[in-house]
Amino acid sequence: MTTTDTASVTALPPTVVVDHPLIQHKLTLMRRSRTPANEFRLLLREISMLLAYEVTRDMPLELTEIETPLVTMQAPILSGKKLCLVSVLRAGGGILEGMLEILPAARVGHVGLYRDPVSLQAVEYYLKLPRDISERTAIVLDPMLATGNSAAAAVDQVKAAGCQSIKFVCLIAAPEGLKVFHEAHPDVPVYTAAVDSHLNDHGYIVPGIGDAGDRIFGTK
Ligand code: URA
Image 1: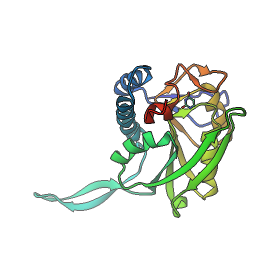
Image 2: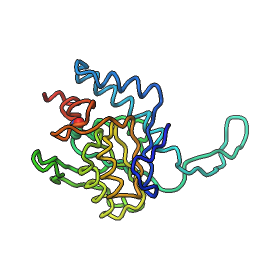
Image 3: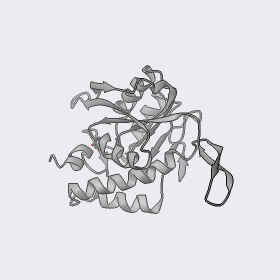
Image 4: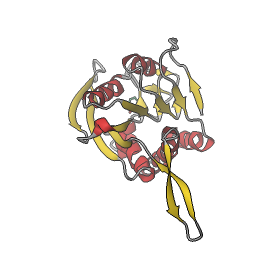
């Protein structure tokens, strides 16, 4: 794992690049344009499980007394805030699946956002968050942090619902998007498998993977 201070202002939170070899290998397979949708989905699910380990690394533990077949012992269990996974529709669903494998007890929220093709601004069309999200740590999921507008808008909604402990997980981030996101939400760390070179004129990440939603669902 590498932590990079991508923005020049040191007070901004870190971008955590999860550079585990398995993740990097699987991401390379995903990037290939000839990788079919079924393989792409499986790889995203596998990478998401690996990202789940990293994003939950700081979850607090407490000791509880249990009986093993041999003795009584003090054993660690998770304590503190419970989790809420927030999927940014529609591509966030690709990460959600893998995260839920590792975190089956998490609640799930959805934020529906599409990107206006001209302004590249995020437009909201759906919002459903658990009622008790303010008592949980939210992990917001969207594979591509491109302009940063959708990511920032999704986190706006999670904060508006009262949640104060938030992390953002993506597959690939663009430097431009990280800057926008960290400036909008300096309290929210970003976990990503890669920081790519730049955005093109259409707001796509280069080299990237293309349109994540289309590649997950085979819609192109
Ligand atoms: N959304 C995508 O699906 N891909 C990009 O490269 C940028 C935004």
